[in-house]
Image 1 (cartoon, rainbow, N blue to C red):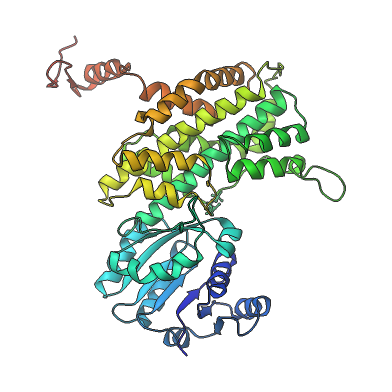
Image 2 (image 1 turned 120 degrees about the vertical axis):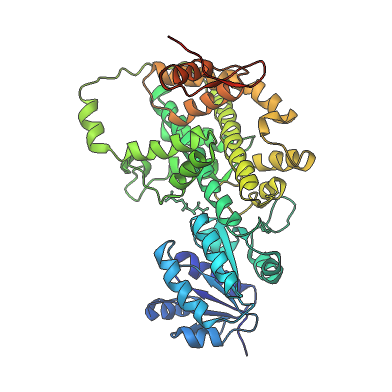
Length: 463
Ligand code: 6PG
């Protein structure tokens, strides 16, 4: 009996996706560079339950029904290229290779073109939801040809998470790199969401002097309302988690954050595309500066901070966080909207807002509002133009300003909060002082400026 598809790479994500597929009655050939890992997986999952182990790539490929579907779950970068070369050498015209890792979308564009030359279908597939999502139901964002999508749809729809209406959190995002692009921006939005929550936690802890249990209660309460989301939910759980000795785990974690680069890629891409994603870069830099622990210790020794107890209420923090979240998504969605135009992906933002409702790390009630907005106005260039968010912003922006002001007065670093506000105050300004920048550029470099009246470019003889 032939296997329905094959999974290469059995680290956590690959192993969990393979098991999820087998749970859904697919016969899944599995292969890993080191055979011990394959054996281990068979041991944990159980023999003859749908996972079929292989220790040789040739036999693995030969075991698959045609057209063959091979899912690569290997480390992004050079590792993917190496495995891909080997695998493509064994495949035939019409076969489908899926890269389910967090690959850089420009690599995906290149790989898709190379595979197409050989008559193969290449799908760059964003998968979100961490370990648990991969095992029980992730959000899936495939990018590739319609023909390839139609072949893999019946397989991957079965293992995807469910949206608010119980439909599958998967759909074709667009051609070549579109799936990996939106996964990359998903991660960048995740960075901002997380950073905003962290800054609000810090305001609660240092400004309001709340205890972990009190904060946990507040987050649990917020999770029942507009801020309802996976990240708010786990924050509440994290805050109250104690180890066996009764100590709060959060309190002994070093304040130095890591990253695997998707936030950096998004920042670089927004710089390339000329899109002002202030908060995405701010969230990346916030992680970078946290890792300067030694330098922070030295410098902080010279600059004493006096914490003033703020008069903010939990309600104000909730409203501020909600306003900032809207502004973070405004930036992320604007980036996707403009990239989709540049790369001719025709990304459906309504569908994306639906796919992100389940399984993924940024899943939230909030995404239903986005879904409804894009259902009504599919080509909206900025969510701040929608009637719904116009009303939401006007109800909450005052609190965001107050929280931002309190953070500044109390020397509490709040890069994500402040950058969201900066984004709003800039994008909602009919006029900006950029006329002066243009004048200065023209003064020292004869760069010319555009006149307001007729848009004509002009150089003025300043001196
Ligand atoms: C997901 C996550 C996952 C991971 C990112 C970010 O959607 O399942 O986004 O992909 O959390 O790689 O990781 P870093 O925080 O290490 O950059």
